[in-house]
Length: 78
Image (cartoon, rainbow, N blue to C red):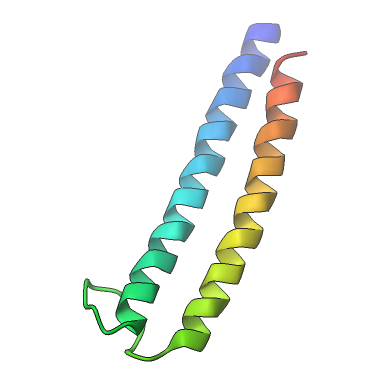
């Protein structure tokens, strides 16, 4: 049972990390688009309010996912 918990905890930790990476990818691309540097993001030039909202969302999501990773990691080590 302990080995199953460790495997599940590692898988969930990786999944949460992937979610964080995807969110920050959107934030970076949105910031570049807002600065009028086109790389395929959907934001328009000068849309700093939308970019700021993306940054706040990414920070909150990152904190929540890190808490989940810590909780799941502790559960997996029981």
